[in-house]
Image (cartoon, rainbow over all chains, first blue to last red; front, side, top):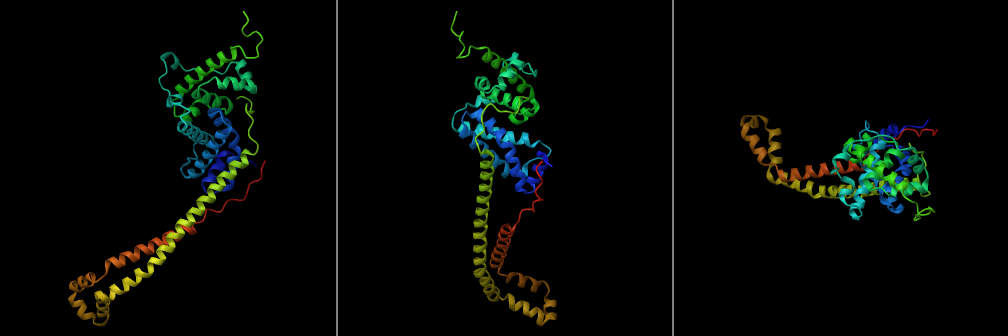
Amino acid sequence: MRKDDGQLASESTLGNQASFDELVRRYSRPLFHFCYRLTGNAATAEDCVQESFIKAWKNLSSYDTRRGFRQWMFTIARNTTTDHLRRKKALSFSDLSRQDLPFDETVADDGPLPEELVSELEDKAAAERLLGSLPPESREVVLLHYYEDMTFEEIGSITGKPMNTVKSIHRRAVMRMRDAADAPKPHDETYGRV
Amino acid sequence: MIRNDYPIDTPAGLEDRMVFAVDRHRKRLRTMRLAGYGTLSIASAAGMIPAVSGLATGLSQSGFLRYVSLAFSDGSAVWSMGRDFSLLLAESIPFTSVAASLVLIAVLAWSVGKITKRAPVAPAPYAMA
């Protein structure tokens, strides 16, 4: 019978290497996807994922089994990727930590994505374009919410932001993706015509 | 949730590489641990030789052994002297040598304990669904 993450995580904290290896296998792909979207480079993403797993293994003794392993693992991956990008100076501090939202943008909106955007995100080529149009802090919210099925509360826990801030970021991301989806595409034959 | 089909292709063999990387890190730490604590054990064991030798010399030169043998040979005299004898005994202890020997014994025991510390026995592998 397949064990759930909590069981494997508990066994890992007791020193069961096979259980931790199973968790590594389960989370390699989701974490790679997440890190790749933040770094834009497959090799860098793989390095970040590797470093994240090593950090997780080293800090198993401090893992709180009451907290979801997925949430914990994504927090480590997010922090590892952020540190990596800062070291490379590829990311300004404000990109992932912006708190100075205009008043009207603090209105939370946790409504679902419009259907047309959902279908675009399911299309690989379109998803590349849409996700690429977003700043890093919006991108990570979209990735965690729509690809990892996390709640805004969980995302807030991972990113260290209040839930309403996450919802505001989500709202802005939806607006930007809508604009990007509506923008003329490079192969659009009507592009440039009066 | 968007269907679980990420918009980018996962590099082939990613999971195996990650497991291998963690395992390699584990082995490296184990080797460093063995080397570090092993060196400490050998050093403290080697240090025990001069420490114990110095302690024995110190005990005999200070008169401690003489006073102790006196306690066993003429107990009544020792008892009558009471507190004075106790102070005499205490003053004759070579504290530096005793402290050094005890520290080395403690370090040796601790480092050997670290080397021999074993991870808990892993439960039997579960069957995949």
